Length: 182
Image (cartoon, rainbow, N blue to C red):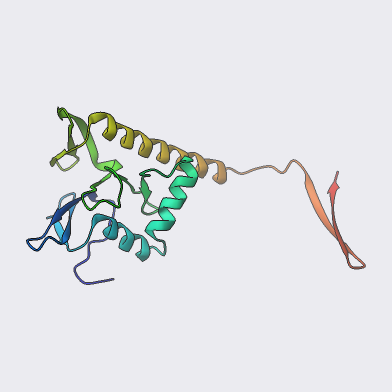
């Protein structure tokens, strides 16, 4: 793990983009009950470094979400499968001004003024996002559906299944074949 790095975890509420005095991208990581952490990198890179610490990557997380959602335009990202943390982007993560919000820490959101959405986090922070309420709601709904699909897959794979048919593999003189046992 690198020095001066905040790993995204269950307390992470948002990753906000800003710029240093020199114009370099800076991320402000907001964590519930903690002081903000500033990192000299884009929010996307904070997410990628966190995923790499879990032996994954940003590209892999995007591909996984796109596979589950059947679309890859601004997908939410699953940070940790054991303790599901889903981060949703405000818009394309390729843009340096893309902010990320933890689905679990969005307390509410509403239209502040035309073209701006006010997001209230679980820690009480208010963040004014320059995007329409419809666009933010679309990202929020996509993240909820993503969570639903992940939960559904977990339930399907964790059920004990009674075998309906038993198969037996026979081996004989260089030939292998499968047969159904009654």
